[in-house]
Length: 260
Image (cartoon, rainbow, N blue to C red; front, top):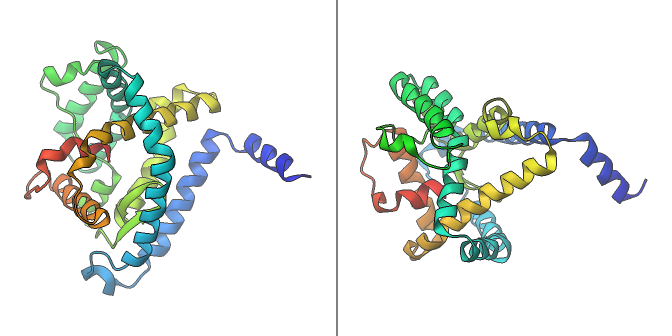
């Protein structure tokens, strides 16, 4: 069997559900190994900086030659009103995961608000194209399993730069693995799009839209890009985990961090 035939067979065997499960399991396995590192590293914010910087350089190269040019082209041909609508739709599709994260943290009133937000925007807002719920007093919340683990007392662990996925921590990477695993069960996007090609096209569109939204804010990055992004990520994560009860030095760049 040739390499081409083997790849074709693998593509047939691993559908989108299988891919998401395998990706989630691999990431979870990686994080479980990382969590076994002695706690002596707990006092060091970035003990793996040398490795992280290499991954960061790789991500920057991939972004420079692929993601950013596509994002720039997308911005040039997409009217702002259409771009906003696309952003709203993908944001709305993520609401079920937010509701589950609310419940896991005991934020029951917020879970009720976010459920109402999802229902209103999915119906009156025409599948999330319009953020009607915001005008009805149901603001957007950012909750994920990384924040859930923090609420449960799990330490953040060292800062971690993931290939292609970007900045994280050991705790947040573990939470991301759980979110990925839960995606098929909770994300209407995954449930509605049975066709693998259509599904991945949708995922590509979502991340292209996110990358395009970051372009105007890139001018705020100064000095060492790696250190700036690390500081931005860690401070904003602390801000979100504590529900805003800490000083947010990057409060003017909330939209930038959310997309990032």
